[in-house]
Structures are given as C-alpha cells and as structure tokens.
Image (cartoon, rainbow, N blue to C red; front, side, top):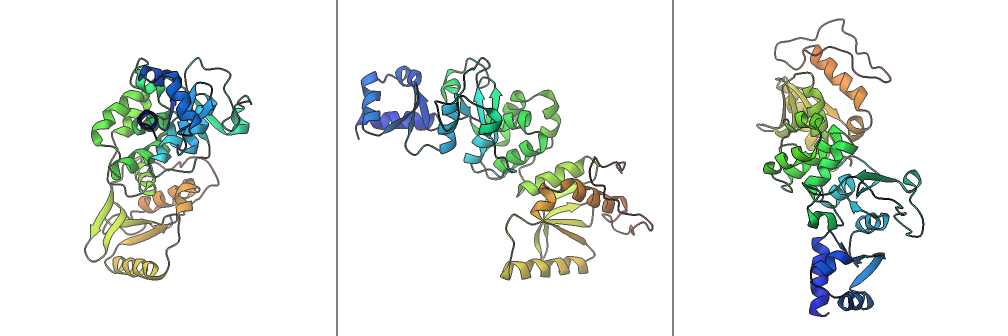
Length: 321
C-alpha cells in the first residue's frame, strides 16, 4: 500500500470511517490519488463524493448513503456504551438537506418509516462553522448523547451518558459541553449525572425514584456481601439482573447474599431486565408503594391495610413522600 493510500485511510478513520471528496482535497490529496485508492480497494465509493474504508462500521456507511452522519444512539453504540434498545438508524443531516437516499440503496429515495431512519436536522459541532465536524461521517460521543436528549428523551440519554462516564469513555468535564448542546429542559437531569452507575438499569431506577425525593445510593458496599446495586433509604435494596440469566455459582452466590442481607434486616427486591426496561411503569409503582409503606426505613413497619394498586397504564398518581 502506498504512503498516500495509508494517509487517506488515516484521514478516513479520523472522520469516522468515511470521508468526503471535499475533505480529501482540503487535506491536500489529488483526484488521481483518490482514484488510485479506490481502484486498489483501499477505499470504496459509498455515494457521489463520499468514500469509506473497507472495514468502516456498516451503520456509518449506511448513514453516509442516506446523506448525513451517524449520530445519537446509532453512533453511541459504536463507542460501547450501555443503551436501551433502539432499532432506528439515526442520521444527522444539514437543516436544508433534501433528496435523501435509502441507507441500503442510493438509487432509492429515503422513506423514513419504511427504512427505519430517524433524521436529525442539525449542524454538527459546537458551532455551524466547525468545518471538521461538518465533514465527519460520525458524530463524537458527547454530541451523539446530546442528540439523544432531543430524540429519545431524558432516561435513554442519561443511561448512555452515565454508562460512558462509568466506562471512562467521557470525562465529567464534558458535561458542560453536552449541556451547551441540549435544550434547557435537559439541564436539570444533567445536574444529577453520576459516574457510579454500573449499568443502565441502575440509572433508570435512580432517576425515576429521585422524583419522589427518596435518598438513593448506587453500588453500596456491604461487608461480607460485596456491593449492592441500589440502596433506597436505610434498608430497601434493589438488585438488578442483566439481560442474561445467572446460573451455577453466580446464582447460588446471589441467593446466599440475599439471605445474609435479609438476616441483617434489609428488604431485598430483585428486578429483572424486562421489569426495568419494558415494564417499568408497573415496577416503579410497586417500588414506590414499598417506600410509601415505610419499608425503606429502619423501625418503620409496613402500614397495615395499604393495598398495592397496579394500574394497567398511566402515570403514578401517588404523592411523593
């Protein structure tokens, strides 16, 4: 591989795996060098004026084919953060973008619902004049999470953000950058951000319980039991199971720890992945009912006669403590 091909690949990787003809020329590459890289297979032509490396992430190529850059959950996923399920391809396009294409066939005009594409009509970077960001095929992690607030809402975005912080993919210093890229309503939840959530399930439970002004601690160390996921008040412990089912030694260890905590007077509630992600309204109401009965405090017996009412839908109507 020639040195010019190597340099073109490095440039493409810095732009997210794909780059535009304009970016190539701006970096000093000639049309013949670019044509040679395509002919030799170092780069592939994605659509008119755009090229990608052979090993570029497929979603980056699909976003470029649409006519924009990969963003929001689609881009954050490539960084390895914990995300709630999102099957859409999120593509940032310029505010005046038109005649966008199918992510899988550049000869077909885009049908957003049919092609499962969510469009983000927005310039990239802190300012619209950030030329490098405009040429990138994929938004950075901070910008992608900021777009998640606008598109997916507070909880999915906070799940991604706290996962990125916990895995050292972002630093707390970048919170101010994200704040500047999000609407005003997102600033309050950003004040609650914590790098301590070990999974998105903890983030979900902690954020929603915070609305009821109940003290919630994450990853609390218990002598002889290791860490517990969430401690609500003094004694109500939530343990959150991941997507996979624990078996064998893990299963036995978890149950032994649950028993030890019960002997110490703690109330242990174990929640499944589905209970937190797909059935949270019902689960949330049940947990808040335990709090309302005083079971999160030492020396506060459950209030007799309180019934646990689990409505089929709608918001939790019980007043906060």
